[in-house]
Amino acid sequence: MRPVVSCPGNNTCPYGLLNTRTLAEKLDAQSHNIGFRGAAEPLIDHELCVKCGACVQRCPAKSMVIESEALSIDYDKCLSCGVCVRVCPKQALQYGRIGYHIYVGGKGGRYTNEGEITATFVTEEQVISYLEAILAVYQEMADQGQRLSAVISKYGQRR
Image (cartoon, rainbow, N blue to C red; front, side, top):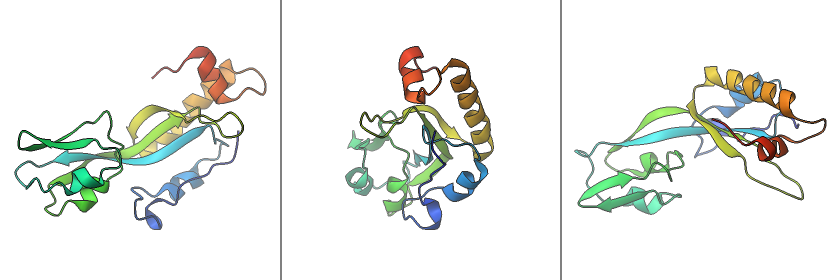
């Protein structure tokens, strides 16, 4: 396990959605195998949407399309990054659920892999409970010195 590291969050990053520094300071466990990313669900007010396409063009996940004269979002692709909400000139996109997405099993080094999403839109108050549960399962199932990603590979991930 590695020390807690956070993205800059909304204090300094123009794409920051939440104050990640505050959360990182609350986490006393050492966990680089577990990631927390601020997330905000975009919701469409179709009455305000003029179908200009600004959100479609700027969406980094390409999860938005205008079809049949209406804007739609593929939430399976959506990163919940908030870019679309910030670029909408008519405020037709607003934030719905806001919280943290939790990723588990990320690993750097020679054999890297990205963490898998375990939970979405978790409130800051719930993050500590999720972290404690993940670490409890890890302590129960891991062999000595085994990385969390290896435990997930061996036993699978359950949501």
